[in-house]
Length: 149
Image (cartoon, rainbow, N blue to C red; front, side, top):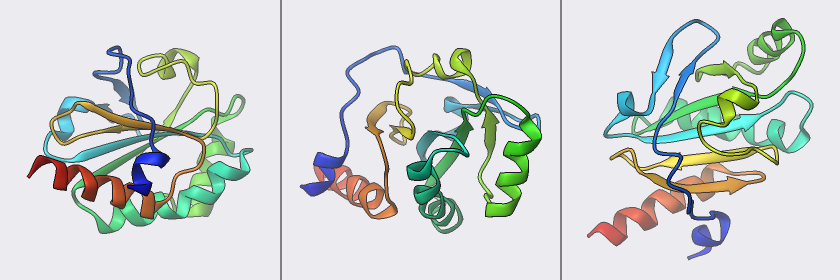
């Protein structure tokens, strides 16, 4: 039950899909990841809580084939700074160079980090304003799986 305290349910219907172009030019659409949980994490290089959660997101992306992680860097300024940071942290999941227009596909981002979570059918499942952990994500998925049975 503790996992439910971590996540806030998305009440808005606006967040049913997205289309992001990552730093390599690849387009990511929610519909491309049917059958997997999708985590869209808004962060910035200057945000200490964001930096704290990145290792958990990296490990989820590497270890769990049922979870897709997309990072949206909300830094303003030189994109090379973001990409150098991504390399230095060995972030292996796709990184989108974000802005308010890109973020508005999901919500009005007012706090970093913010994470939006979609179930394997592509439905909004939850959002977390503030730091997230691998443990809270896995507990949430487990609880949702039990609910469906």
